[in-house]
Length: 629
Image (cartoon, rainbow, N blue to C red; front, side, top):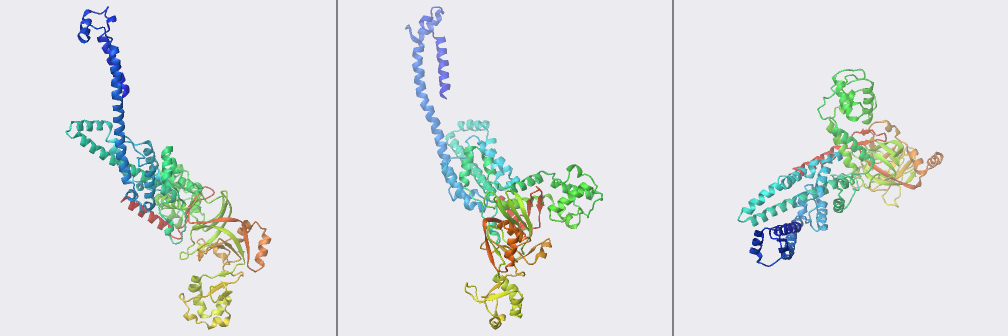
């Protein structure tokens, strides 16, 4: 009984007692039987009952209040100690690993998991004994929205969490608990059974709390740094974002900002948000099966094939949905088809030919997976964006852009590495420019591509290519003359004993052209001019050994150096190697985005030139399968 209830009961007792046994002064107007009853209890003394009862009530209050308080505190402390013991046991570094089915995040999140509970003295985070806290509901809402970030709900144990929640708090309602309590009270061993029931409930609460925490940390990790490690790829170098997620979670709980704290971990740059908008749009489009376009079509055609093409075009917001039921290939459809072709890197003809038809017939799931895969890649970049001013080279687009505060200030075509000699994905800083550069031929190119020709006629080949042969790779190596070159038994030279250094002198035919843009790095990758400018007319431009050839190197030099054109051309005409250091170094980001949103707000898709889409999607699906199996 609570104190307030006890006081109220005592007051009622006092009032009833006075009505039944009034004092002597109040007896004059009462009937005689009242006096008889009163004297029966108190004798013939004139006693005020209130004087007697008030000390008694105060005594009872004093006696009961500490008893009640101690009893409640004791129950709470016992429960809390039991829960703390279970939480501590299940959250140590070894036990914590069992809460993360995702092997990759388990490697580091189990420590964050342990630190989180240790910092809160092993108290539960999401639940009370009789009900979940509102933060748990908020987390489930956030996990339900995972597909909007291109992430699978199945990865975050949602079904298991909801099952435990129902078991603990829905089915086991207050009414059900009262029934169980009455049943236990009637039992001879009700105390032992009650204790056993509570212990089982504690274990379930601990299990559910662990699940909620592990799901938050896993989802947070995926939003922050992605699901798969890009550095497992040979030609991919990424510095993924890092954050103390245990501290981040504790702050989110204290501020009651679970959803907001998770959204804050997603990449903040505009490209991610723009792709997300298209993803949500595709997810929410009508999901009924659309027949494929079976034949080529042109403006003026009519029929069901036109209608099917219009429905597929309506995925991309470039065709009025009200027009998709029309069977006529009209002007509006032709404009929408032009947009579709351009967003896929095709020449806009407005005609549905074989190539266009193959793209058009891709199911909605294909485009969703494409967007999701590229959103994953954006989570691999360090920082909140690419910066205010930078050079962006997108490999699948074969394109370089100079960006300044969101505006595209320069754009040009590029040539990238072949499938065998892939241009790596990484970020670096442009530091200086070489005019009339020499080219030191990498050993792999010298042995595989030049050595066979040198075996036939070494001096003729070297003279034709404007190449010098040095006796070693040392700094003080000397160039060999024609007699020394002729004495070498080239048939005996191969990759195992090649010791020479080949250097191409400056000139119009130099492989690097007239200008080289240097960003010193371990991969020996740089940007440069090229004597083979005709290759920029090709749609697929994978011709280099990994470095990036520029369509407009002089324009880029003018932009970076802030020189006039005459000064740049004068340097080139000098025919000797010289260096110009940039006053303001320029960040360079070489990325692989087969899907992106351009400066006009239109989504673009390109060919998966290095098959990274296929590889990354395969790894993501394998991970999901292993997590939910």
